[in-house]
Image (tube, rainbow, N blue to C red; front, side, top):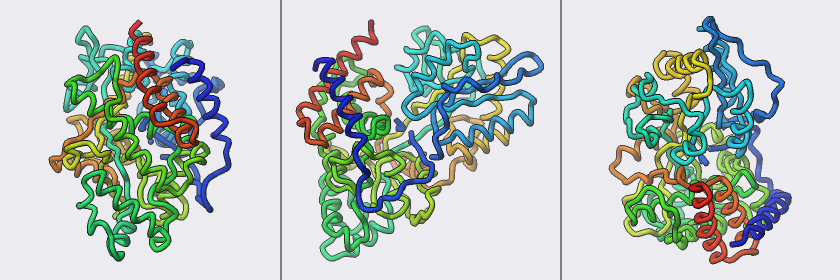
Length: 472
């Protein structure tokens, strides 16, 4: 696929995003925002605003500057920073990058005189981009407290350069009250959610629910499929992970320089189900954000939405929320692949803390002290679990120190029920440019400007091009 075609697609996608909003009265969430994970509270201003003063130094000259990846938890991180300063006297600066801009902001900030001392990478690919700035954490308390050392990002030299601070999962979130109402209708295609363990059964149920949407009091079965540029990470990253996971599995590898998109038709299965049984017409999806989707779910306008356990705040914080906590459940993303009746949620992490190796020793020590406080002190652990909603993978956390929100509890249930979790392979996706192009192509498919074969060819071509570019 020629580069100029990609540029044209992205331009078209930007124009498409200016379309009018979808549906009849689909409410917007007051201030929620994502995840790339996949995805919470109002988006914080990006780090481009350099007007803030540098944080005060501690007694030994150390300082902490955390560049946060997730806009949905900016408010919580500001509270944590203030609490740590009050307890230790070390002032912590937290800046949150706007959704979809983290790499760009980090690239700008890391070269400055007031560079972040603590930042995030998304896994092995992110490490390759930032390895010159990643301190070896092999002998740190942070790494030594990690329950599963295999979760860390290691370098070719055997050193440890990224430590995960949470485990997350995503799938199809559903409103059990609406599902129970459907199961009680005449001719329902299933009697319980337990019967939905394949794409064939999911499709049968969803299409019957669409036919009965007036009876069920919903605008669509699925929330609007957000394809506003920068808001499409649930599809070009999280959903795309499923076919890539199975292609890797077939080849017994953890990464590939080229893919055939072997399970392209399976991606298309669930994609078509989403966009054709939604609150929003396919041609209008370019105007929808994640906040729109989550508001529709929170207000009972739909029965299902694809997202992760981090989305509980996006549901519970919506003004006028009608979904009861006990009705918020998970099911796996079924696509029609053989053996999927044993499939669980997509479980993993792309949240790895890195300490800036270019920072002064005092700054490094202050930063390590801060993250150690987060995983070992009573106050820090409470913030990790209750405020940030993290399922922290550290031995310092007991069984009673796990998140208690309904989606986190569902995640733990799936992790413990013997199903096969789909690992997070999207951390090996070639680049953000690849994902952006994939998202733009999905929008053009919805708009009727690309065939599915066009989408498949773009994915295969751009994957190979971007992998080759990063290998140079």
